[in-house]
Image (cartoon, rainbow, N blue to C red; front, side):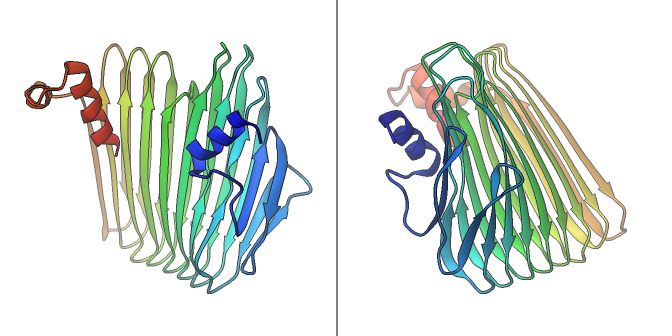
Length: 305
């Protein structure tokens, strides 16, 4: 890897070198390397770009890294990754995509991830999208996620897109079985003329299923954001969706929460709040010696932390 690729790897996965244990590293549209462990098997797909990941039942406290890096301008790719998580597992998956576009053409990475969690499996999934470049080319990322949770399964997703992505459409669809849980924490910041749209659709099909979907975002300059969430309760279940956004300059933010209770014991809540930074917050920090710009950045960093 060159220095640009090493920097992207650090930004999206917190890695300074190829990790130990199970990993798959994709660079400029090609599988750069992969390694299976005793309990985590990674198989390259033969019919389309991507990998299949199989985690043995009972696997505990193991991690998997699957970063993607693009440093070649004009490269567009669509990758399919399927995760098959066995019963009673407890694993962490670190994904993410970093693009460095130093030319005038558009670079794009679109990924389709499917998660199949068996009974009582537990997964923490961390995904960061990051873009940079010294050219005029656009950086585009369009992640699609499909989730199936068996009885008692638990999936926690932390996703972040803070810098350098010109356009993104993030789609997540999930089906939850009995006593299963889906937790989503999304953080997005847009600036310039960037556009970001996120869409969540969760079906709570099993008794005792629950979901908590939270999106925090900051829109600056003339950027545009759209947040859509749909939660459907088909059984005795609980669901909560929340969009909390800070809007600055000439940006626009739209929030479209939707809840549908089909079962009489479905308990569903939606919340949406869009507003600017409160003046008293700025004044309080400025009395401590910060400039208005520094105070604004401090508030935003704390909001997205």
